[in-house]
Length: 112
Image (cartoon, rainbow, N blue to C red; front, side, top):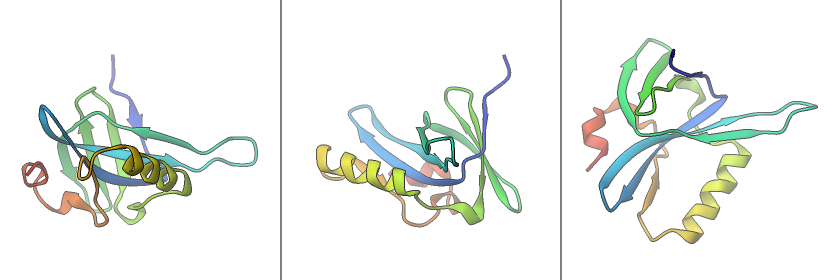
């Protein structure tokens, strides 16, 4: 089965700190149109980052591949509300939303 390909309208890297350790995931948002609602997705853990001139190709643990435009780093209104709700319910520092693109550094550095 080929991997699932995703190209979000907006995206951010998030680090989750859980009992098993830290993992970096993607929080992605797609803007809806006249007939469609906005959508979001939280990826599985990012396993590999391939840096292309205008995009990152991010391969995740589930086999999904995200093609994320470098100039589209950020939150949508929907994902901003989701993050606010998560921060209200989770312990402090359990979820770190990277305000700047974290993939300019090696992935292993994000797991500290």
